[in-house]
Length: 352
Image 1 (cartoon, rainbow, N blue to C red):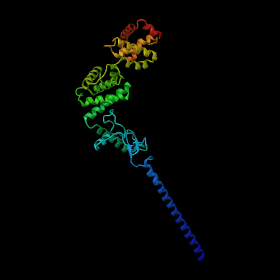
Image 2: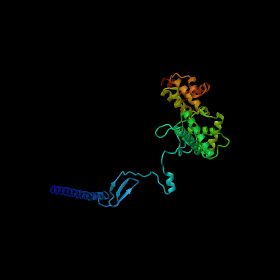
Image 3: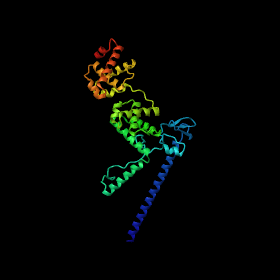
Image 4: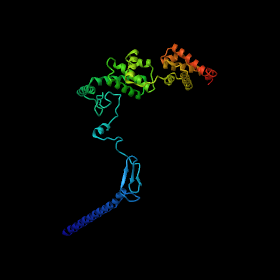
């Protein structure tokens, strides 16, 4: 028994010695690899041309240049910092951005939070009766805190009106943003006393559409507004005058594409309508005339010249211009067209 025990002890000692020897060799190999890698890292900080370590980083060009020989060691480096610069902590806090961008379409510029109307938790499970009552109270207080004074309540109501009317008129988002900025200016310059919120909001939207060259007629805007046409026109003239908005007179050609799309007429007829309007401008026929009426008459006249089946009643229904106005403007446009090209006016356009 003692011999067998001694033999097993010797085997265990030999195995332990072999393991220790293998571990020592592994550590020595790791040390050799580490020593071999160190020169590589040092070489990465050196100029491969002259061996200098005086490397300069040009942030504007994204290059690393050797200050001794001028070799560009690295190029197209990625700048992971912000694209803005700040010179103090206050400016840094002001320019720092986290979350969604701000927008003028909301009275608080989108900086506050909303509590959703769904009475469900994060897992989609329905809340209990007590929890639903609690969430309703939280929504109520959240809405109260979002509008702290009368000015913010005024702005919230007006921006809601602008968004509603813009949706009804099919106006793009840039027009809504511009209208919101115009209303904010009117509110800051104290133009609201004595006038309704809806009237100034309607005037701001109409001015923004004119500035973006996607105008809507006064009748179209008045139809979706909560104020009558007279109040809307007075508010519009007042806002434009007091804010010194640079709004050019409406061009009849700006209405043609939308009306042509609604009437489903071909491109040839639309081009002829634009030619009629351009000719009317050259001969100053458009002076003092409604741009919407001229656009409607030009489309009807172009349909006649290109042999398209289009009645005055169809044009009147789409453009909200009376048939009498269309007939009067139609005659004026054709007379100017004949004067401009006496030998190829109506007949030449019809043959084309």
